[in-house]
Length: 550
Image (cartoon, rainbow, N blue to C red; front, side, top):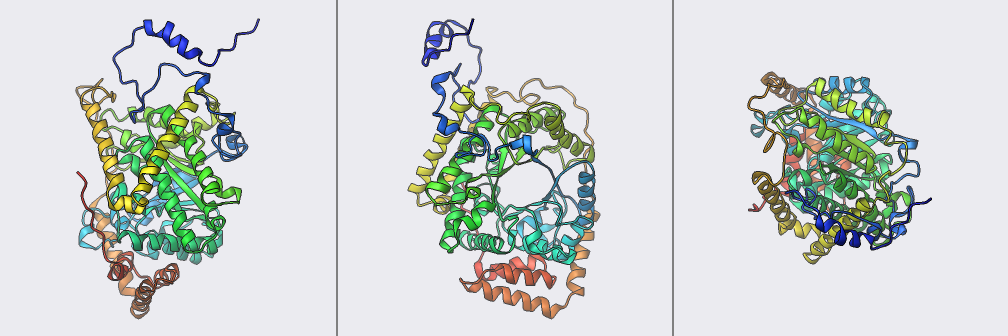
């Protein structure tokens, strides 16, 4: 005897006749982003099948590849970088020995801001939150013993991304590896820096020129390389909602596409090498819906708005990192559970690459033990849980499909508002995304402080005394050693060649028609330092000063 199929609209009857008589506990029945959640979802919440589709087919809601993890698991990366290039190189080799399948490079704050290690503003920050890279000499040491034609490398840097890419290409060149053999990604997402992370070197327009120069260079010289990883991660870490992360990230991506098209590039020459970087936050189903909506929107807009014809241009491939902002300094071992749930959401959402945060990262850079646990989390999900045996196991879920639709609608609402302001660059200048994120962060913090949003170990289930966790500490000797190194590079290089390369770079910057990647490569070969290169460009481009948002 079969089970009777529920009629469409049956959920409304059930709510009226049954659920309305039941009691509800006191709680916020919303996603972490504030999206109201109904008690139950039913057949009436499903979109047309054409919006769900099949994996590997337009609109790619269920995944960009037909076989997904039945064909190949995601790339397991652990974000690593601290101290000097030698110390980070040791961590890289350790991670590769532990089964990691790709490298992800974290740079220290001076490197991210375009300063050399001996710059006055670098004091106390050298090697603290990432690796210090001042010149191509450091880049060579960073990847010593690592065959760059065999290992995929990710580099998280934005404002001086073109400089670091030049260092990387020359370091590979000295290994005997040509640019067309290099695989990996450099972040280069400067728009989200003005929105959220606040690490910049130049005003917006010349910064966008550098991004487009990199896109053009990589399209012609580095066909296996992703020149941009459009990054929602830092937008979310700044306090945005999932909807804001999705909308602002995609709009940034569309803006990079438009700039490249204005340069005269054919969309199918560069769009296949765009990648994305999302946050996997703690609200399990909301995150899965976000990833599914992102694929669908990107495919539709690239095809219908920008005219892409190569199927590869429509595929949104993305890296995911579990949410650093969800980690707590209180009861840090709880973070292992949070990271596991977030990693599972990324996998069920169809990520191509994943970094799992270590449980001690709310306190300091992770220890080797913490990194190993984080990597083992991915390996357990991949090999023990069974979630990779079928593709998009939550596809067709009334709840997930409804959330996916709502996520998409919210993104298009933001697109409309941004377009009314004149596009993303103008919206940033008017502080629109910055204000939206600030208001969302304030709302969430109020919910936590009022106890409406429970954070275990922080505003509920606290313990009076906590055991101290052993953390990684970077000694001051690292800074002194790096300062000596960058000064030695300047002293031992051919000074005339270095100055000539910098002057040639300034000349190219004054010309609107010249791609700056070529003079940047010459600067790298001449052992010019990052700070010298950035300051040379600033003499032409100027500096950026933000208007604060309150």
